[in-house]
Every structure is written in structure tokens, then in C-alpha cells.
Length: 187
Ligand code: ZN
Image (cartoon, rainbow, N blue to C red; front, side, top):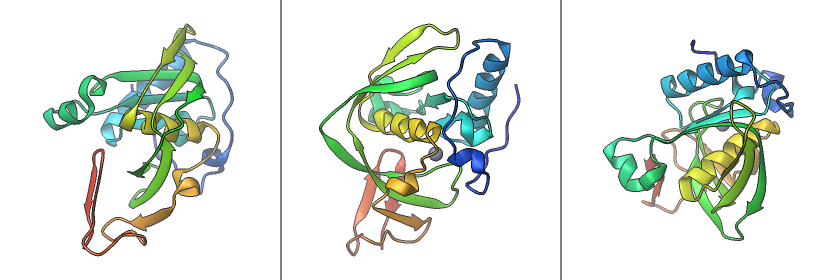
């Protein structure tokens, strides 16, 4: 396994629609292993193949599993998802705002509205069909990563984007935004 370089939007691969995976072979398995190692090293909670300059419909997701994460995410904490050719086949009507960041856009945050829960049809590393039914923060991570497979960055969907250490444009004085594992006090 090895850690791959995470690219930024100056590399056009990040803005392309990625191709469906056809071959569930050793090359795919190496890509998945490297993506997991790269995600954990960053550290991040999700990584899509275009972020390591591979234009294929592959993503990995893993929420942390420390004590705080277990309290916040319950049984979603620490579960590793390796997801090939995902399609969102159902979306909740309920939408929620949350604060996102992206390993490909370091040093920024943004508020993004996402579906509260979704159902995903996908394949595992061997090509077997799987269903994933994430809700809450996990559903947000999956929507962010699936967007990467279509060349879409969260900043295109965000109602506001701000630099780390600065306050969101829409924040009220003294407001504290607490969302998932991103906590930002806004003074
Ligand atoms: Zn991202």
C-alpha cells in the first residue's frame, strides 16, 4: 500500500465525470487499499478516486471511531465502506444544512444543504451488488464523495464558503456552528 497525492482543482481530473469500473481486478484492489491509507493519513472521513487523479467511480468512507465519534455517530463510527459505481436510488425529502470541508480544497469550509438520508446501490471490490442506507452525517459524506465522481465540488453547492479561522459570511455575531466533527466558534 502507499499514500497517493491528493490533487487540487488546478488539476482538471478533479472536475471531470469519472468512468464506471468494469474490471474488479488486482489493480482496483490496489487503488482501494491506497485510497484507504491516503484517507486515514490525511486524515479525512471520505475520499473519491478523482481526488488521487484516477478518473473512476470509486470511493471510500470511514467515520472515526474514537469515544466522541461513537457518541455522535453510533454504529456508523469506524465502519469502512469501499464503494464502486455508486448510484443514489432514493433521497429523503428532508434536507439539512451542515458544514463541509474537502481534502482537495484545504483551509476552507462551507455550508451545504444535503438530503438527510439516501439509499445507494453500488458494488463491492469483487463486483457484488451492495446497498447502503446512510443517514445523518454519513449520508452527507456519501453525497459529497459521489459528487466528486461527477466532477462536482462542494463549493459549487455551498450557500457560503469561508477560510479556516474566518467567520462565515452569513453568521450572526457570536454564533457557534457545530456540525459533525467540524466545530467552529464564530466571534
Ligand atoms: Zn471532497
